[in-house]
Figure 1 (tube, rainbow, N blue to C red):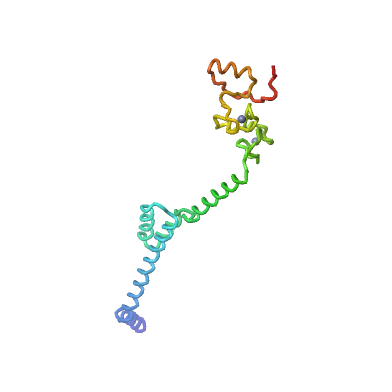
Figure 2: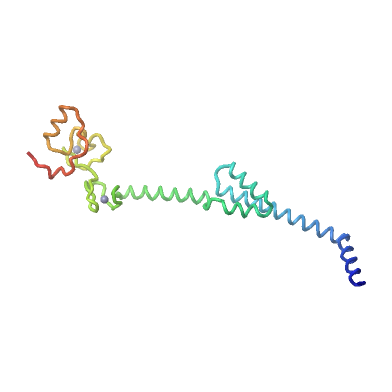
Length: 188
Ligand SMILES: [Zn+2]
Ligand SMILES: [Zn+2]
């Protein structure tokens, strides 16, 4: 009994001693420092991942308000990539595309097979890629309105024989749907 009482009084003495007060203040200060550091870390991390300043503010608040727990909640929801990485990847992709276009690398829009710029038909899926110019025979882009090589008007020259062209010119009716195989249509 005596020993217990003396232990109690010892503990009580300790809690009223200057040592305890100093220790407690130190612990509180460290806890505050850790809390502030976590908030600052959240802010820095959010700035690297989020572009919108309002969302950065919200993330920082989240990192501070549930003390010590906030940064972990933030980590669950933060964007997976750094903004710099996203930007860099986009630039790299643009550069790669430019390089490929320069080299003359094209893909079939139907099957992604590698084709050359002046192919009229995809060798893989056999679909038509371009029509040949009726006047000079060079491959025409479907978006072009005239042949850039010989200045022939494409609208006036459907890929059907001359008879159809005459008829069209008379009626001003656009012939919808290319007649496909220009070569296989019976030449009169
Ligand atoms: Zn194809
Ligand atoms: Zn032409």
